[in-house]
Image (tube, rainbow, N blue to C red; front, side):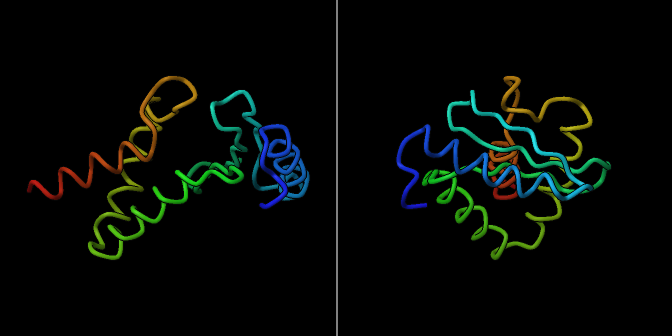
Length: 118
């Protein structure tokens, strides 16, 4: 987003996105503007559906997503096992970076390491 170069402008863009996403009744939007990188956590109201975090102009997140995308293209197991691992970690309360536990990205990197070693 070219006009969102400062933290304040990124938060404004996220607020605009939040108001639009808030119309979707099956999901809830949780702003996390106090995080190191301001994000919106968009999660289902019903278990079993996928949640995601939305940020603005976070170049590192884009690079990380592309990296994981390449691993998924190389090995079909990464997507399935990654989603299973994330669900397992969430059920145990150890997959919430905002609470000081392991991020989904870190879990998938550990999974990739495991798959490379086996």
